[in-house]
Length: 369
Image 1 (cartoon, rainbow, N blue to C red):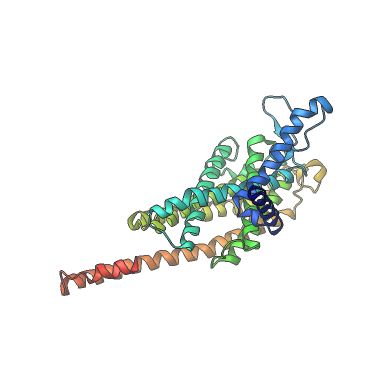
Image 2 (spheres, rainbow, N blue to C red):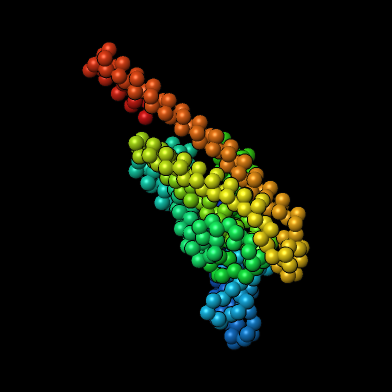
């Protein structure tokens, strides 16, 4: 009897999480959602050869990318279509599950090992640990993809030469859709306030909306090469940011300072210099598009009529403005830390002269910790 009540309670909890969107932050519920398409997919693969041979598996687009152009050939290229939305939807659930497993079951024990006890800090430590893993993986993956493209390393003319780039290799397509799923999942968490909002909540919402605008629009109009370049410029500095924040929570002061200095260098180069390189390319190299493709002809994969230059330029510029806002905050923190370090050093020297041997400073440090 008790087992029956327990199962009923779990089912009720699952449906409650499903209806309230709490599955986004409940790994048990997101895991159940992940299993449902896999079970149906496997059942179809096992049963359909005997019932409906040759009929495509309707659950395949959820798990795997769709629209291969030459199935069976060595270098399969892929087109785009509405079934890509099913792939993104499934991987929103996937990232919800992975995020919570990493934050709760990997990062939280590490945080407790470093004597982090306050719930808000445990949550933030988990978020930064997940960000470090995600952006490190996607940064390396993005670099690997760019290395196979003519646009390596920011050879921006190839954003436009031979446009439209409507055929993608499997890796580029999967990378693009996985990124879409990640940012959709992050936006859901923010919009539904499923976690405690941060001080820059509205700036983050704006950033995620602009990011998704860029991802979806560049994917639709066959500008995935420039999209890969922008992803790279955004992902890599976020690795340094997350790492320096983790060191801050762990109170590794000297390592934190070094990591923060490296982060400022990475942010400056990737989020500003390279982003401005991309903006300059949009403004000055747009005309490298073949004249026959500088038309609005979606059926031929050509979307870049002359006025589209401004539609591409504006969202990247908005992203740069958001980056500049955060750049200002970053330098404010850096200057404040340098100032505090100098004043702390002067205070320590004066204290050594006036009351050498006192333990008052140590007592204060213990209280602050």
